[in-house]
Each structure stands twice: as structure tokens, then as C-alpha cells.
Image (cartoon, rainbow, N blue to C red):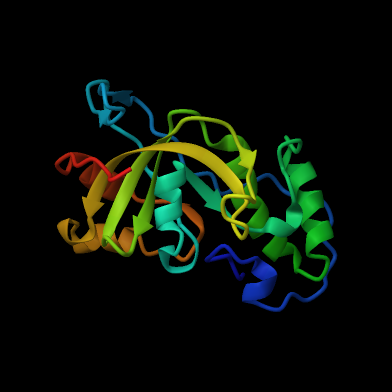
Length: 212
């Protein structure tokens, strides 16, 4: 199954072949939220109430091309602009119908892959959930906290119009991470959860504010 790896749509990354979609299954891919996390005065997570869960990484377009915009606008964003504003779509079925209309020649499993990421991003990410993105210019991962609901903002990044507001609170240099953690961060998905061990390592590194 081909999965989006940038702000471009899946149809641009690979030719889609027609198939019958039928009904949409539930989104099986759900990065687990952080449990037992309280925050310090600056918004950073603290481990005072138990073990933290796995972090979610949201890529800033192909090769992290929009990392600066993520930081300057205080947000994370994903592509598939063809589906339009999802602000009124509150179920998987509604988002699935939008995808089927936007990509009529995509195979069912391609739609399911896009659906899992779009419905998680627009509906299921919780307020105060911690997310990561990679800044290739600084060779660093940014850790932030989601501060608001989904918004359709093509005026900010036209290729990545689906957004969530984020307060960036920590910068972790790539060279400070172990090889095992870097491997956990290597998925080609637009959105994915990293391992428990990698999450723990990132959260345990010395605090460094981002440049926002």
C-alpha cells in the first residue's frame, strides 16, 4: 500500500487503479495517547504521575520542507488538499466518502491508509497530546503540545491545509538520540507513533526550548 510521505496527495505519489471501496472499516491505526502525563509550567511533560505513553510524529511535508512553517505558525499540518475542509466531517464514514470522491481511481486499501491518518489527525488527536516533527535544517526533533481543534487553513501551507495548533516546547538534537530511537523514527508515514522506549528516551533528554 502506498502511503503519503509529504504534503502531496497519494495520487501524486503513485498512480491509483480503480476498485470497489465498499464500506469503510474502523481506523485500525491509532497511535496511543500519552497517559499519566502532567506538565511543567512551560508546558513540558513531567513523569510525576507515572509512565508516559508513546509519542506521535507528524512529518512537515516531504523531507521536513515545512518545518519552519510548522514552528512559525505554531501548528502541525498534513496534506490531501483534494478532500477539502473536514471541519464538518465528524465520522470515519464522512471522511471516507470525501476521499472516495477525491480519489475515485484509488484502490480500497489506499483509501483506508489515507483514511486512518486523516481521521486520526482531524478527529482523534486530543487536546494537550504531545507530538513531534523533524526540522532537517536544525537536525532536531521538535516536541509540542496540541492546543486546539482541527482547522482547515490552506492560507498557511496550500499543500498541507489540514492543521492542528501546537505549542512547541522542546528541541531535541538528532545526534543526541541512540540508533534504536532513530530507527523508530524512520517510518515513511505522514503520522505514526514511535516506540515506548524511543518516547521515553526523547522525554528524558535535557530540556531545550525551541526558537519559536
